[in-house]
Amino acid sequence: MRLQPEIGDKIERARDVAEDAGGRALADLQPYLSTKLLQIGDFSLTVGGIVGAVLAVIGALVISKLIRGAISRYDKRNPRASHAALYTVSRIVHYVLLAIGVMLALNALGLPLSKFTIFAGALGVGLGFGLQQIFSNFVSGLILLFDRSLKVGDFVQIDDNVRGVVKAIDIRATRITTNDNIDILVPNSEFVSGRVTNWTYRSVNRRIRVPFGVAYGVDKELVKKAALEAASKVPFTLSMEGDRAPQVWLVNFGDSAVEFILAVWLTEEAARRNVAVKAAYMWELDTALKKYEIEIPFPQRDLHVRTLFGMEGDEAIKVLRGETIATRKAKSDTQDTLKLSDAERAELSRNDAEADTKRVIEEEKTEAEEAAATERSKPHGND
Image 1 (cartoon, rainbow, N blue to C red):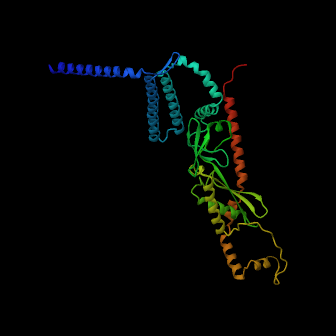
Image 2: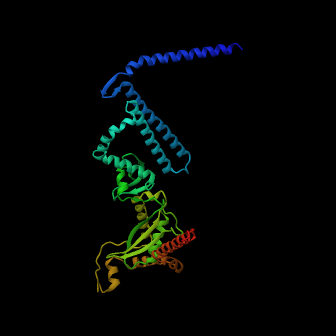
Image 3: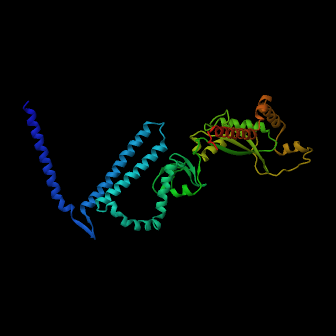
C-alpha cells in the first residue's frame, strides 16, 4: 500500500523536471525566435514568425495528405462507392486545409486577418492583371468539381487531337491521359467556356459506326449476314440481341461501291478506345466479306466489250478476267454453298435503319406521355 504514493511522487517529480527542462529550452530559444529580420511600421518580421508560418503550412499539408489517404483507402475498399464524389471531397478538403494553413501562417508572421485588408487592394490588382487567368482556372476547377459535368474517369474529347480519360482536376489544369498513355494538361477554363464532348457523361456505353463498301450487284442480305457475323466475333460487341444488337445500314450508292455502315454498341471497356476498336471491326469485316466472296471494290471504270474471241457480253468479260470453264464451275459451286436460305433471307431483309428510327420515335413519344402524365398528377393551387 505504501508503494503507490511513492510511485506517484516520482511521477510528479519527473513531470516537474520535464516542464522545467522544456521551459528552460524555450527560454534559451526565445532570444533567437524574437530576433527581428524586418521592420516596416508596426509590422516586424521575426525568426519565430517565419518558423511558425512554415510549421502551419507544413501541418496543413500533412493533415490534408492523411485525410486524402484515408479517403483513397476507403475508395479502394468499397468498389460501389462513387469515385468521382470521393475525389471531389478529397480536393475540397485539401483546398480548405491549405487555406486554413495559409491564414495561420499569416497570423504567425504578425499579419492577422483584421489587418490583411491592407493587402486586399494590391491582391485585387494582381488578380486583374497577371493572376487573372490563374484565378479563372482555379474557379473553373471548383465549378467542375461541384457541377459534376466532368468527373475523374470520364472519357472526353476536346477536338480531333485531344481525346482521353480524365485523370485529375487540379487547381490550374485538368490532366487527360490518351489511349497512347500521353498526358495532356488542359486549362480548366476551357471546359467551362468551351465545347467538350463527354462520351461517358450519361452512360458508359456508346455506339460506333464502321463504314464499308461492296461492289455493285452483291446480295445485300448476304452482306448483312457477313457484317453481323463479323460483329459477333469481336469481343467488344455489347450484345447480339435486343435493342442494342448490331445493325447494318445501306447508306449510299457511291461511284464505285454500295456503301454500308455497321452500327455496333460497345462494352464499357471498349467505349474509351475509338481507333483501335474500329480497326478490330474492320479486320473481322474483311475476313467475313472474303469468306462469302463479297467483292470489296476500288475506284474503277466499266469497259463495255461487245465481241471478243467470238464471245459477247458477260462471257467476254469472264475471259478477260482469266476465268476458265473449270474456274467458273468451281466458283458457281462455292456460291451455291454460300447462298442464303429463304428463312435467313426473310430474317436478314429487315431494314435496320428504319426499325431503329421507329424505336427511337416510340421511346421519345412514351417519354413525352409519361412527362405529361407526371405534370398532370402534380397538385395545382387554386386560382
